Amino acid sequence: MSYKLSTAGIIDDDQIYQLVMKRAIEQSGMVKDVLQFYDGEEAIKYFKEKQQSPEALPELILLDINMPYMDGWQFLDEFIKIPFKDGYKRTIYIVSSSSTTEDLNKAKEYEIVSGYHVKPITKEMFEQMMQIIGGMA
Amino acid sequence: MKDVLNSSVFILSDLLIWLAYTAIPLIIIRFITRQQEVRFARLYYFFAAFILACGVAHLLDALTYWFPLFHLSAFVRAITAVISWIVVFYLIRQLPYATRALKARESLEVEIAAYKEAAASQQIKNILAQESRQLFKNVFDHSPVGIALLNPEGRWLNVNTSTCEMLGYSKEELLKTTFQNITHPDDLAADMAYVGQMLKGERETYQMEKRYIRKDGSIVWALLSVSLTWQEGKPAFFISQLTDITTKKRLLMEVETKNGELESHITRINEFNRIVAHNLRGPASSLINMSDYLEKTRSEADKDFLLSKVKDTSMLIINTLNDLTQLLEIQLRQEKQSAVCLFRDAYENSLHMLHEEYKAAAPVIDVQFDVEEVLFPKAYLDSIFYNLLSNAIKYRQKDKTPVISVGTTAQNGHVILTVKDNGIGIDMQKHGQDLFKYKKVFHKGYESNGVGLFLTRSQVEAGNGKIEVESTVNEGSVFRVYLSKNNLV
Image (cartoon, rainbow over all chains, first blue to last red; front, side, top):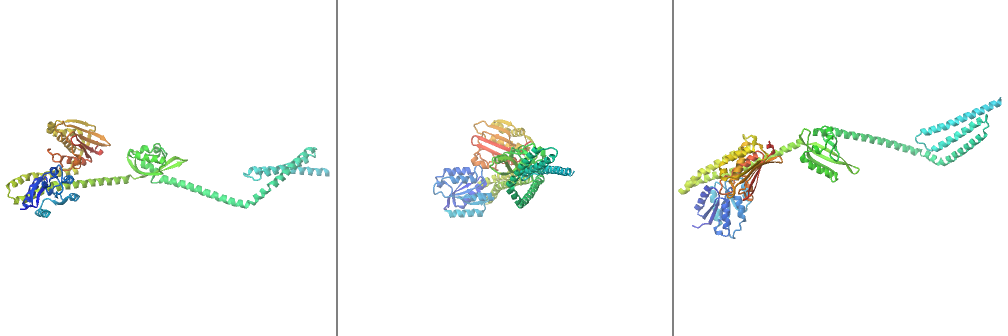
C-alpha cells in the first residue's frame, strides 16, 4: 500500500475527536503517520524544533480554534513566522465546532489556511478531505 | 402875541422831534438786542447814534429859547455831522454786502428748504434711533434666547428675563456675580480659553456648548454665542446669547446611553454565540463523532477509552450550560439588588472561603480600604474578591512569599479596587486580549477552568464598572476594578 502523505498533524484539545480522527485517517490508508498535539503551544514547540527537518513535519495539519494556552489563531500567527527549510509543503485545515461568521471570516484572513470544516465531521466531509489529499501527492 | 405863538410852535416842535429822535434809536437798539442774529449790527448802532444826535440838536434848539447855549449847540451839531458822515461812509462800505445779502434771498430760501429737509431727516433719524432702541429693548426683554452683557472680567452688566429664567437667578443676584462663578467646573477652562482669545483680539466671536449651575444646584446646558464690543481700542463688553439646549442634550445623552447599552448587548450576544459555538458545540460534536465510531470499531481499547470520556464530555456540556445560565443571570441582574457593601466584609468572606489555599501559601496581605463601602450587588462583590484573591494566591512564584496588597481609593468619582500580587504574572502580549474571555487558561500545571476572571468581568460590568490588568511575567499582576460613581455610597 502506498501512502499519499507521510505525516498528518491533529492539533486539538478534544481527546475524543483526536482518537476518532486519528483512526479515520489511519483507515483511509493515505497517510503513514499521525501526530497529535493537544494545544497550540505544544504544537508550535514541535514545529519550531523541527523547522529544519521537513521529513518530520506534517504535510496535512488539522487545526482546532478553541484551545487552552495557545488557540488556533495564535498558533497560525506563530507558525507563519517560523523560517522553515525550503521544500516544506503543507496544507492547513481548520476543524472547529464554531460556524460563527466571526471565525469563518477570520480564517479567510489567513492565506495559509486551505479550508474550514465545521464539527462534527461527517463521512462525506472526511472523504472530500481525503480526495484533496490524494490530489496533493 | 403872534411872535409868542410862533416861538411856542417852534419850541414844541423841536421838543417833539427830540422825543421822537430819542425813541427811534431806543426802538432800534431794542430790536437789535432782541434779535438772535443781526446782520450789519454796527450800521444799526451808528444809525441809532446819528438819530439820537439829531434829536439832541433839536433839544438844544428848543432850550436856546430860554438859555443861550450856542457853544453846546455848535458842539452837538459838530458831533452830529461827524456821526452822519460816519454813517455815510459805513453805508458806502457795507453796500456791496447788503446788496449781496438781498440778492441771496432766493438762495437763502433754498438754504432754508434744505435746512428744513435736514431737520426733518434728523427727526426721522431720531425716530428711527428711538425705534431701534425700542426694538432692541423689545428683543432684549422678550427674546426666548437669553441675552446678557458682561464686562471683560466676566461680571454680568445686564441680563434679560430669559437669562434669569434659564439660570434660575434674579437679575439683581446675577449682576452681583460673574459667569465664572456659575459655570460648571468642567466647562470653565474651555470658556476661559475663548475669552482670552477674544480679549487678545485673536477671534471675533465664539460659540460653545456649556453647562451652568442654576441657583437650585441643577445643571442647565446652553449653546453660548459670544461677541465682544470694543470702545477706543479697548474691550468694552461681551454680548452673550444663551440658548437652553438641556432637553436636546438630555435626549442626545439618552440616545448615547441607549446606543452604548445596545452595543454592549451586541457584544454580549456575540460572546454568548462564541461560547455556544466552541464550548457547547465542541463537546456535543465529539459525542456524535464518537457514537459513529463506536458503531464501527472492533477495538476494545478504543471503546473503553471513548466510553470513559462520555461522562467528562457530558459534564463539560452541563458545566458550560451552568456557566451560561450564571452569565445570563448576571447580565440580566436577576434578583441581584445593589446594597451597601463593606469592602472589608467582602474581603474577609472571600478569605474565609480561601482558607485552605491561604494556609498552604501563607501570603503576606496588606489591606487598605480608603473607601470603605460601595453600593453594589453583595454576592458579586464577594465573588470579585474571591476570584482576584484566589488568583493572586494560586499563581504565586514557587520560591517567593506571596505579597498581596488589597485596597480601595477614590479617583475622579470612581472607586478603584486594586489587588496586586508578586506572582508569576501573565504574558500580556500573548494573552492580553483573552484574559477575561471564557475558558481561557494561560498557565500549564495549574488547576484552572478559565471561568473565574470571565465571570468577574461580567459581574463588574453588570454593576457598570470595568476591570483592567497590568502584568509582567515573573514580577506580578495588578488587577484594578473601576466601580462607577453611581455606585458610590
